[in-house]
Length: 135
Image (cartoon, one colour):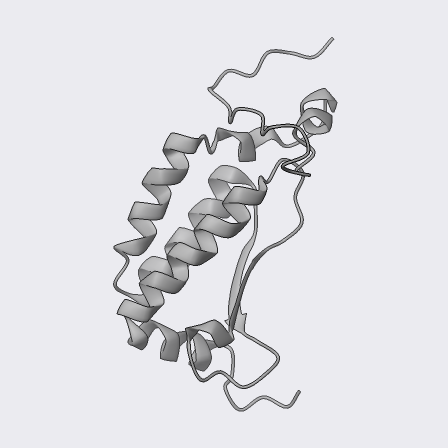
């Protein structure tokens, strides 16, 4: 028998709309269900918070908190091609069961909006990822 989860969790997506594996995660007694804490309301709050980030250090703290509190890894790094705009950055989540398709879209979009408002953060990302590395 599966134990009840002691916190509110994200509601199920309509059938066929998402392939997050929410139900399989809930059935797995050893599954990491922290990602399900990100309800739609919490997602809206997180997106608003991301859009108000103004420094590279804040963005790095956000990445750490997402990993600590939700158990998901968010990577922000230069894409494989030339980075001329914010669109050249790769903003992706590592594969994780229970991570909704909408979250995979809304959070990277919020990060891009943040970076468009704060180009200094983009330069710090490029610098931290060795702009002159050999591919």
